[in-house]
Length: 256
Image 1: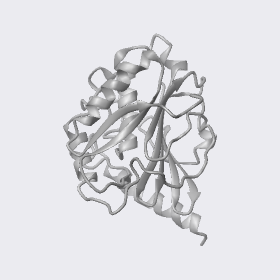
Image 2 (image 1 turned 45 degrees about the vertical axis):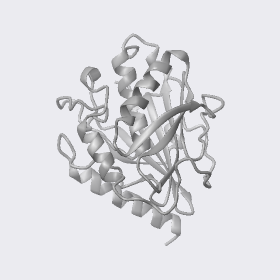
Image 3 (image 1 turned 120 degrees about the vertical axis):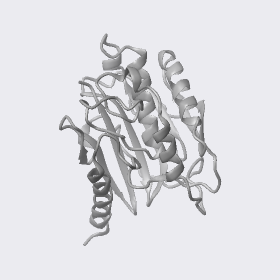
Image 4 (image 1 turned 120 degrees about the horizontal axis):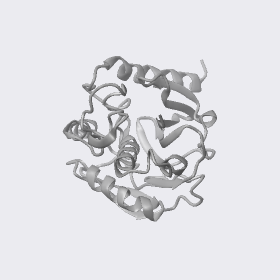
């Protein structure tokens, strides 16, 4: 069997274990154990600021929220994403962008590149095509989606993917009303401690590591294979194998 097919099979098998947990609040919401390699805790992850002024306050809130973790901090730095429509990834950090990505159905996406079990870079995109509308142009929706997409780049999956369940008070919980789901909750911080309970011999956070080029990534046709579906029947996670033990995951928050 070709190596790429073996890798894809291993990815799907690992994520199937997550899918089977089920329930309104998953006992573990790590996605496959993927994490940033680092040699000490707490480590600091840079968030590249490629967002417009209307998003700056929400990026600050998200950075502060996730920095409350005992095992990691995030810091906002000048963006290197270039053209915000493409929002190019930068090795060892996360680039955060916003623009009008089009009427493509998604509010926000997080794209995370992995090599083996380690995260090597990430991109977060906020789709102003929807956030410029009355429905989504609220502090609650902006905080919710920004917090969730950055959370994915840390190694977290969703706590719950059923929109009809009661809010869990976490931005990692799917909801149709994010009024009480704008920030992480204690379970998110506990899960980060579990994910980062060990140390690595090498570092990918803040490091220059080999990555594969990718397209703009704004359309589902570029995201590879859908491997997880949320409670409303729409795909919530895609994977594209990149060869040599590398893969690109795309997490999607869809508009209603």
